[in-house]
Length: 467
Image (cartoon, rainbow, N blue to C red; front, side, top):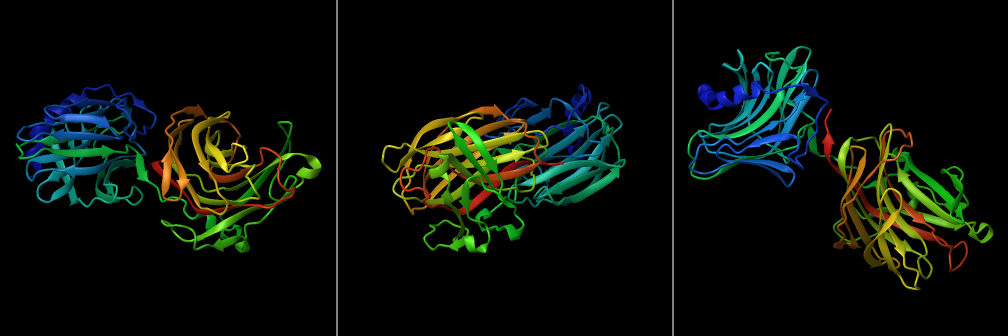
């Protein structure tokens, strides 16, 4: 039964072997476009859309829709993987293939064989693609994201691997390199080699990506003693020029509270849905504004370990207390520092300063704040929610979405823009932050205490780049 598929794949095998295979730098592809792939319907359809590749074979027809990577990849000393998000087949009629083919037509093969039950099968072709060798099989048990399938090469040995989370890999088979791994072409194919009563398909995603990350959750609960590295940055401005800036040890013209357990709270008014009903009170006790006439900013952040993920979601509940009307801006940034660049996405609420509690959301464009035309009233001691997703990758910041409002009742603002990172020479890390921004001097009472209560502060990521 294992060898019955050989005639179905020989034509594609020979075609791949003839392709040009100049190897390129490691490729990461999350199927947002078809720029990296050659698609062939072959009686079915091969479509890249909605961030996935869908290979579909229609009912009552023989077909083999295929997607072939345009460029050659170096497999030597690396793991190259894809994610099968879903696979539907018919027993003894359909199969899904993952291939890596060298310039001589020799090929590694890892497939989902619908032999009732569907089984993961590892094998390879040698002799220029003429002879198939079965190695081993394993159960097909996809996880929440699907099943990751991979070829790995190390020390002259090839490994056929699967995983449900792209962190823990199960070896299906291994063999001394049966192909030239210095440059290979990857391809995927969904094949109906017998007529089926209904359409069948395989949905593919995440070439060398891990789909979802563990996330940094409940950041508001972390204290400095907990090792999460809370930090404070403060600034003072006069006539638009920064005249002082300092770190936690010597705040610039301000008195700001700490991050120990006494600054954390439990509040049963935090509305559902919630992870817990605890949070952190970010407090500006006083400023030297009456004497200096400076505008002051206080910026609380956490320096978290670096994760090389592409897309980041910032989420927080917040509640602000102030005397009369808010005169500060509230800013919500997330930074991804690489060894060379700072990639920052951020949204901010600024008051309209018309004697009301109304304000407008703004989005950071890399050099200035852009109004979104989305207005929101912030009332004292009332819980609000903000969430946004931003791409931080390939030296660019790419916004994907923004929502804000009262908890559980959010309004979205659609805005698309891309801008480059800056070069601060910072240690790699992920840095979410919250800032109270005194953009105009306090019009109520000098040295008035201000609090921003932070709860449900979570940072999640998707499309994590695998090593």
